[in-house]
Image 1 (cartoon, helix red, strand yellow):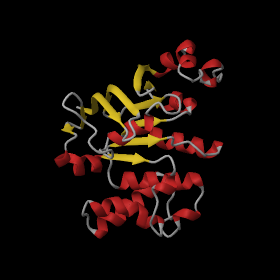
Image 2 (cartoon, one colour):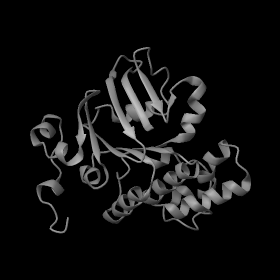
Image 3 (cartoon, rainbow, N blue to C red):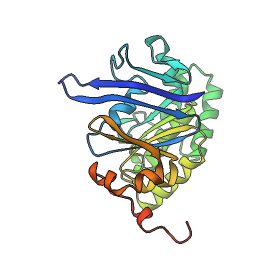
Amino acid sequence: MNALEVRNVCYDYPDGTRALRGISFTLAEGERLGLIGPNGAGKSTLLWHLNGLLPDPLTQASSVTVFDLPMLPSHLPLIRARVGLLFQNPDDQLFCPTVADDVAFGPQQLGLSSTEIDARVKTSLSQVALPGFEPRHPHRLSHGEKHRVALAGLLAADARLLLLDEPSAGLDPRGRRELQSLLRSLPQAQIIATHDLELVVALCQRVLLLNQGQVVACGPTRDLLNDEPLMLANGLERPHCLRHPHPHD
């Protein structure tokens, strides 16, 4: 079973802007897919479709299937429980007075017992290397800690597919290394939308390249990112780690 199957997805914003033009791809369970492209390529818009955040996204000619569930109104509650979206700006995602409250929000919507919720909060904070942060105020944390709290909330809700929008943005080198190690350790399927191509090389088996709302290329990460004419034609550059590989890689 695939984690995700996307077929011919198109989308226009209310002002008439064409954001997505016939997007099709699949994602295997446990796979990490890099979603790359220049600003305005449609990366975030695509992520928002994959758990039904945008209204009326599909037509008779298009479909999104998540763990064998078609994206239909009757399936949205279950799909949204299975698909966790990490926003680019964690301040848009964290809104509760304490870390524990924020991480517990998702499990509470699932109707779990208080004992199970407390256990999930503790486990997920340990997964993101923030044990004991339950009483902390989210908006007094560092940018990297906020990102990890938001991710802990997705893990606490038992998401099986993680959609990550620029997860390394604003992180210092140590925070970026910690994020990379964390994402590599997680068993969930992941789609990582990012301009951080070094992170894509380190984590993703495949890459989907978007430009002007359509798929330009999809293939193995190193093969695609090493294609310098392709990268330059789409407003990107071959990452430094492929130009000058570390001697121990």
